[in-house]
Length: 116
Image 1 (cartoon, rainbow, N blue to C red):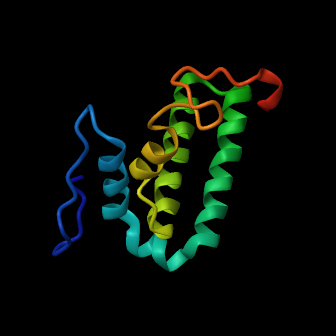
Image 2 (image 1 turned 30 degrees about the vertical axis):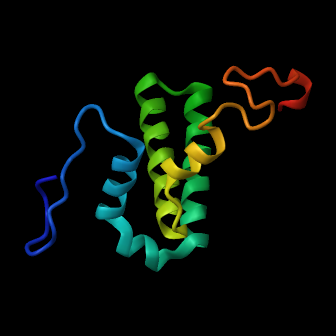
């Protein structure tokens, strides 16, 4: 991230292996002021736009296009979590850290007809 504005705090790029918490912090460091000004509703609309682009890439996009859209969706999910004050790592650990929230097993044994 070498294209920083003079006087802005440094943003450290992610290493090749990183945690979800590190990624969410990177997104926060890069965009939080803009994201906060946009608010939850505006940010949610951007996330939905990216979900639509991912759907199109899954239908007929290249691997590179799919990768880009997955990255965009993850970034916008981190963005809306930041605006909403949600730590994604904490949320994931709370809901999925001990296994499937439906059957409480590490390998899900929920009936298939109950899943979309």
